[in-house]
Amino acid sequence: MDTAIGGAYHRFPSTRLSLVEAAATGLPNEALERVIALYWKPVYRFIRLKFRKDNEDAKDLTQGFFTTALERDFFARFDPGKASFRTYLRMAVERFAQNQYAAANRQKRGGDIEFEPVDERAATTESPEQAFEREWQRQLFALSLDDLRAHCEECGKQLHYRIFEAYDLAEGERPSYADLAARHGIPETAVTNHLAWARRTLRGFVTDRVRGTTSGPRELNEEMRRVWI
Amino acid sequence: MDLGDSVLDHLRQVAALPDLAGTHYELECEIGRGGMGVVYAARDRELDRRVALKVLEVALAGEAQLIAKLEHPAVVPIYEAGTLPDGRAFYAMKLVTGLRLDGYVAGLASLAKRLEVIRRVGEALAFAHARGFIHRDLKPQNVMVGEFGEVYVMDWGVDAVAGTPGFRAPDARLDRRSDIYALGGLLQFLLPVPPPPALQAIAAKAMSADPAARYSDVAAFLLDMERFQEGLAVEAWAEPWWHRLRRYGARNAVLLWLLAAYAAVKFLLFFLRNL
Image 1 (cartoon, rainbow over the protein chains, first blue to last red):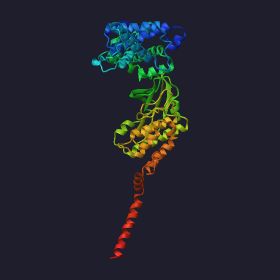
Image 2: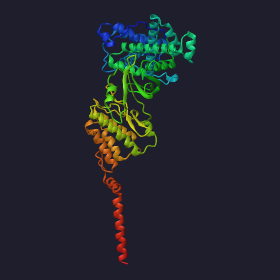
Image 3: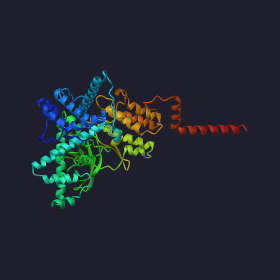
Image 4: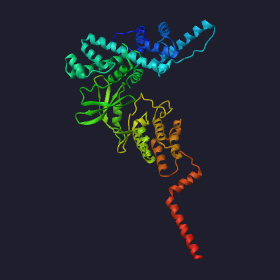
């Protein structure tokens, strides 16, 4: 069910502008690019669960949503005083999918048909909204890991990344620090230092990604709480 | 890159761990999270003692300074504040061992002990209010009862906190009366079932939707609670006459027993004299 659309995003300005700042400086496309990179998968997953769409339909709707957002004044209508950008975006997706569904049914049957938000939650206890939030976190970390890997390659810290990857990205049992030290011919203290550096740097990339898709310090704080607490 | 749930959760946890290099603290374990940050148990190598280390996840200044100004027996003392290499603020404070109030109330604490907790929380609030501070997020999870019965009010509020449902006043702007609302919520939370009507009324008055209908200050709230404990009529409740009579009886039990004994002796003497 995974999809390749909305893939990796490697650009890394050291401090990203917030959405509002980006819009103000005339860079809405750059801001939209960030939003798409972070939100394509959460939106796709939300549509699949909330509107019981199959893989292809969900992809089409997701693509349609972002295309429409590109064409319309999506950012201009966002009011940070009313909701977080994430909530605004999720509600916009919901409205968009409902409108699409109603339009499709009008064409087929010649009349309005009530949209039925159906849950395809047999396999999961998560609500579509929870799945959207979870997928947002997943994508946030996935993109930040891409940033970390690219950063490690740029500054010659490939060993840091390899140790981090072997330990923190292990799906099953994690190797011991002693194993990692022996494998790479370094002292155990170096393993802990490399891990601490990679984690701290990852955290910085996560913060930067969040900053790039929020409207300012207040929303950034709120989103940071959601990520870490 | 596709991340499984377990890796994602692990990353969220390890990337949040504070890097204490360059400090005199050694991380032990996480002991709580909420509000604006995560609290860890740590060892202070210089003084060879355990401390609680709160790491703030959001860029808020002044929380440590605020608490440090509240030197009160029911406010956890701050030892030190600083900044981690990644820019996050942290502060070290006394590590309190004991139970959170929600755990304490699940035990067998008597009503008198529960009211004692409320009294101490109220005193800490009154102290803070007198210095121009408000708590903003008073709730059972933010009150600790130590192993010797000491009470600590934790997580003194900062601007970003807007309270917790059930204890948050419906006020547009939080102020001292919002804290009084939360104190009423705390009293309500601690009351046994069925609750004594006078205490129920005190909690209800403190939790009035209209701030002007609440107690004017914490001292008035505590005074009303004290009246209940001394068997006097409370300001919050217009009690029915039979309740007043019963309360009068309970409050003057010795006097009533003496009067009854006196009447019995008089009756006995009268009876014996007329034999």
